Amino acid sequence: MDSVIVVIDVAKGVEEQTEKLVEVCRMRNIPMIVFINKLDREGKDAFDLLDEVEQKLGLSVTPLSFPIGMGYDFKGIYNIWEKNINLFSGDSRRNIEETIAFDNVNDPELDKIIGEKSAENLRSELELVYEVYPPFDREAYLSGTQQPVFFGSALNNFGVRELLDCFVEIAPSPRAKASDKRVVNPDENTFSGFVFKIHANMDPNHRNRLAFVKIVSGTFERNKPYLHVRHGKKLKFSSPNAFFAEKKEVVDISYAGDIVGLHDTGNFKIGDTLTEGETLQFKGIPSFSPEHFRYINNADPLKSKQLEKGIDQLMDEGVAQLFKLDFNGRKVIGTVGALQYEVIQYRLEHEYGAKCSYESFPIHKACWVEEPENPKDAEFQDFLRVKQKYMARDKHGQRVFLADSAFSIEMVKQKYPNVKLHFTSEF
Image (tube, rainbow, N blue to C red; front, side, top):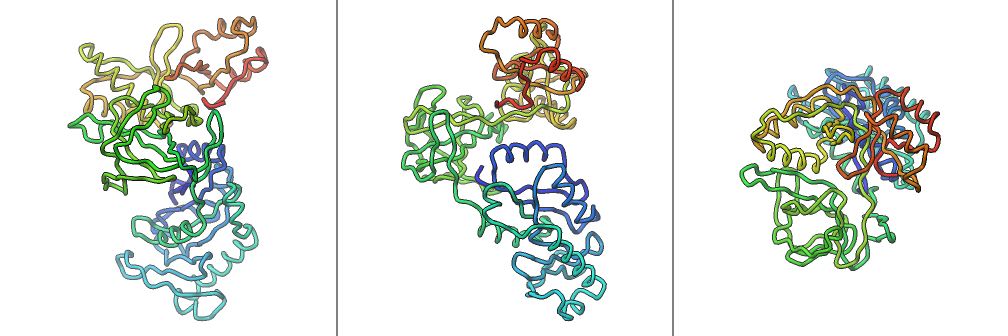
């Protein structure tokens, strides 16, 4: 990712999955813009939301727009970036008037346009914004140390233009990316890219999969052979797709920074690298500990193969994480939210013809275990023996300690100081 727009619901605030995704962005110092959405509905106070974003996501924000009222009293947006006002108009609250330039919010004309009370509130809130939050610094934004914030309502297409205009002006060009051998720059002539997402059964009638590739350098051309580094073989793609919302079209050439969708028959995994011939591997996308854990069982023994295939492909997509216990081989599904279990169950039945059931598995957190230089180390072997009921492997074969409580993690750290635990799979 070269830059990110983080969308926050005005009523729900920061959600669990948002925290996980922002943590990935912070690990890589990716520039972020925050968009606080659904301002036409009742929700949290604007300053409370800004505080929540800073505290829960660890960001340093600076508002570049600010709401005039909220919910039923929502009258529009003051665009701090461009010094103008956008107003809702009409009973439907879907029509947007032309922007009105306001370099000076103390102009009495503002009282006539939005009302005396709303004008006074806006002036006092903007005064607080200018006092509390730092001025926008593009260099700080590009380095990932400052995050501008916009307010609006995406459903009503309100406040979105201001966000996108600013994004076009300040967002970075494609960035260099580190690989296991060197840093690859976007202006290099030779093609390289990596798979960051896989989506199975986009058309259930054809059981197809699409691998989404981010182009890091050079140009990607249709029907040209490229090296699949992990498999060590060349592949050609006759119909690479570009996507815009629900629309897709076949493209002949794509450039650094672009995303292309490649039809996949099972060749790709998330993190795979494609090049014109150079054998390098881009650093992978980390997994974080899930919040919920359950055993998964086969509810129809006659559909075992379908269940295996379905679980395998859904885990490739990143819908959830799969862990296999060492001591009895049982499979555990870990998710960020409890509703994902219903999604998995539904997709297994309707896309793969397999049925599953779940059993509760009371786990607090998944900790990836760093293998010692000496696998026969006495301390490490004692740790594996004592915690054997909680040792597992993830989908990629990495060793994982499924801790049943925060106390268990602390006890492991005290009793086995040389055993290194990590809360992400990339370390």
